[in-house]
Image 1: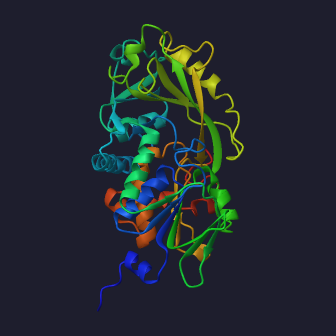
Image 2: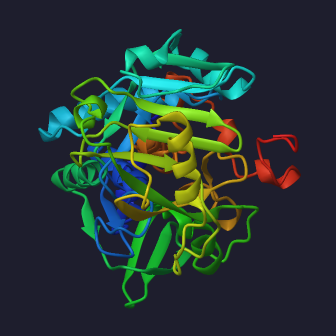
Image 3: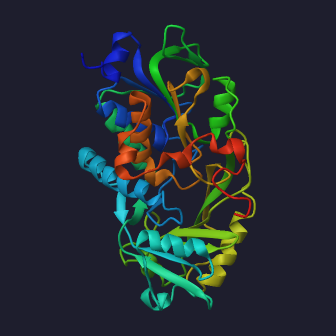
Amino acid sequence: MDNPTPPVAAAAARCFDFDLIVLGAGIMGSCTAHAAASRGARVLLLERFDLLHGLGSSHGESRTFRDAYPDAWYPPMVRLPGRLWADAEAESGHRVLTAIPLLLMGPRSNASVLAAARNAGAEEVDDVSARWGGAFRLPDGWVAAVSDHGSGVLHTTEAVKMFQDLAVHKGAMVRDNAEVVEILKRPEGGIAVRTSTGEEFHSAKCVVTVGAWTSRLIKSAAGVELPLPIQPLHTLVLYWRIEPGREGELTAESGFPTFSSYCDPLYVYSMPSLERPGMIKINYHGGPPCDPDLVSGGGDVVERVARWIDEFMPGHVETAGGPVDRLACMYSMTPDEDFVIDFLGGEFGQDVVVGAGFSGHGFKMGPAVGMILAEMALDGETRTAAEAGVELGHFRINRFESNPLGNASKED
């Protein structure tokens, strides 16, 4: 029996313009384009706005890298891209990941902080204040755990550009200011993608990674009604001034950690002073719902973070007058905060793959998600997920059919 034709070769035999079109050039789309181009696929990466724009979720100066998750299915997805980040850095000659310790803290009664520490292999410390010069003041009944591995800071825009450049180097075509208005199943097979300027591109497969615009694009361009509850949230990236005389204590060079504070209903996270001397980035995980094309406000994010700083880091970070800088950032939030990684289905079957709903915590997993999406599109399955122990069943679209909260229970 003859060997079956490989997916990329089969696509070429049918004379498509591309083997894969990727919509959205944020971190997920850029990593998907790189992964597919690395296999020799003919790839087109389309971006609605300018490349490296600041309107979505993949811009700015830094993101945390951590493998501390209460849900056991995420650590394998972080450890896999940890290796993939290193491979991309070696290939590009650029360094975008800085290793930094991780501090987890929260009430001992909070099951999430205990599970996150356990899954990350973080060790409890008795006196977190002593370790970092009195920077933290934890209430009675709180637990603190530290991990010196599997955590760090990613340099955001540099990382996205790195994967775009690597994809282009491997033959991918990248087009910006190309708004997709229609995704069609071609009668002869494959996908047609049309833009607002009248251009039409053909491919064997398509991957959709457009973040907060996902539900809108799937409905308007592909004409598909799905139980795909991805809610855009508008949050703020906040930079606060460090109290005079303490600037050197809260830097990455001094060993100050990234940290996560589990304090219902707050989840506050931070990273050490790194990109802006004399300032530290401390943020709240979340924000008010928004229209991705009409972003404004940010709710009471600033006030929430300021109250947390005054309680937990008194005398180390200034809150009077508010943050020095506040930058808009958008989450594409699912009800359970889990990703969507699945085939679109319906008339599109396995020809269109959706990667979405990364809920403000997916950036670090970009290389792994990109490899998985590329494999799903080109092969109809993914070896990477299976080999890494990643169970994709948690990320299927149909989880919302029987439960609008997806993987979350009504009590969560």
